[in-house]
Amino acid sequence: MEPGFFNSHDYDLYRDYENLMVQIPKGRITSYGAIARSLGDIKAARAVGLMLSRNDDGERIKCFKVIHSDGRVGKFTHPLGSNEKIRLLREEGIVVKDGNVIDFESKIFDSFKTDSPLKNLSRLQDEMKLKLDEDNFSIKPNLNDEVGAIDVSFYDEIGYGVFVFTNGKKVEIRKFTMKSNFPYIPGYLFFREYPFIRRLLNGFRGILLMDGNGVLHPRGMGLATMTGMLTGLPTIGIAKSVLMGRKKGDKISLNGKTVGKTMWGKYVLNQGYGISLEDSETYLLKRFDGEYPWLLKDAHNTSLEYCRNERGIFNK
Image 1: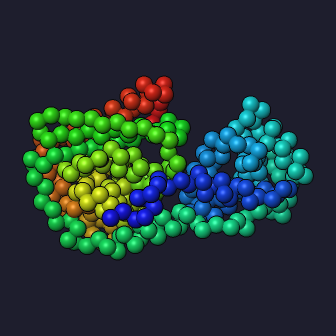
Image 2: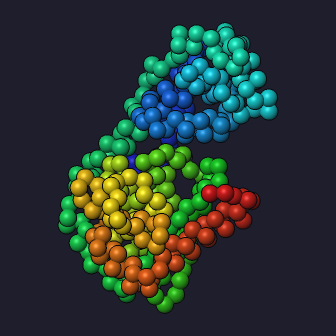
Image 3: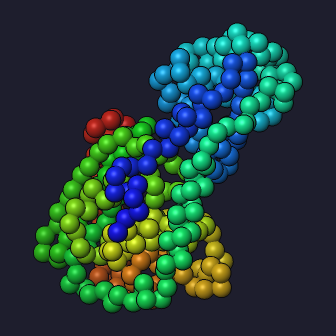
């Protein structure tokens, strides 16, 4: 059973960011880092910049009030660029010289009223992690099982999801697109992509291959593991690079336990949900004749093509 907010709606971090922005008093400024910390994680600072650049309600969301933590005014999404940002700041009594806010420490506002949504989401992952044990990785995959792969490409806030799956006799493709309410933040990929995943699966009960990590995650609950726990599907995580853990030879360990392995050159196989690392490797090598899974390639390439066709040239 999914946690309540997954059942009712897709998590909207833009809403939380906007709720912070409208709290900044007249004549005060804030920083990207201050907003990120109020959202619950400093790693969201870059995402804050992205959300500000997508602002289409300048009267209510005064994005010119956000500067760098060292006092630099920074860029501004406007035809006149930072010159317009400086003009708006000066209108509120903020002194700017050579692109820097003078005495900015006295002007900084960081007393936001917030429930720290990212902290709550990471706490949810921690709670789900406590429910994992060895029994959750005891499924023995069958080569005749239906198997599929999902990939989501993004253009601005629009996501283009593709699910490619096969029962061994025929290949089927599903597509789904919608606006994403959650920007990319390291460690929170699940919350960005799950709204697409749960719609694309739509009754699928086979083995799911995922372009992302499982237990090789800061909280041990990456995209593949979270998806498996919430859907009950056996999942296998296959990431494009080693982002964490201790690497020795082709093995990757986390907290003293081997949970990942490099395969097909740069790719990282790691436990998702339901299937052990050893059984995941055995299954993939037999099912795809030792090659990188063509299903993941097809899902990735099709999602990029889907995105390009809908929104023009796109670089993922």
